[in-house]
Length: 132
Image (cartoon, rainbow, N blue to C red; front, side):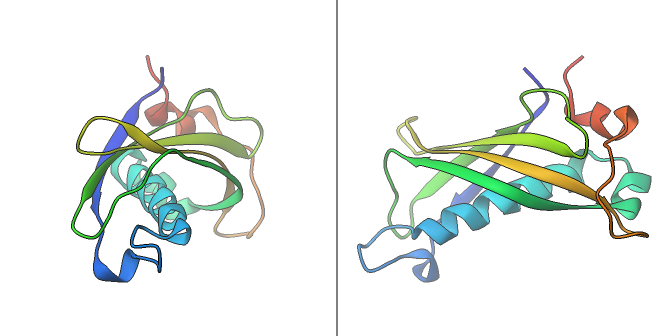
């Protein structure tokens, strides 16, 4: 498995929908938040300065939910090497009972800040996110 990163999220009043639990759009925001935090934590400074990321696809499976005041622990990882300009990123959200309640698989593409164009991910950029 590749290098993983974890972050906790607590549902606030603005995260709750009319059903009394975290809104689907909030889960997607949290997927993006943990992906960005992982990049900020593990990328080399020169890479953070040179590249940006955007999501090209999200797949999300809902197996449960949380209510206001409850916390989930999210874990993200890159399950394999990049393909061209893209990485697949997985995220699992685990509730206080240890159950995975939401799982996501997203495709992120890297762009060069200077040109604004997608760029093949160099091995030195991928390195901090890969195991071994």
